[in-house]
Length: 34
Image (cartoon, rainbow, N blue to C red; front, side, top):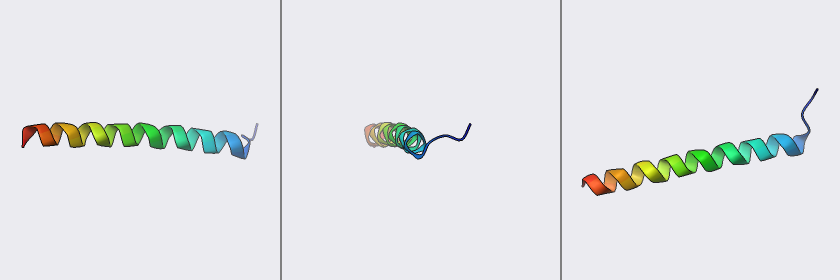
């Protein structure tokens, strides 16, 4: 089955949200160490 474009977009959005959350967490922990 070929995934529909909409599904691909949703998956990409979810992954990027996860990455953004991880980056925010790293930034917070780095700021706490300063």
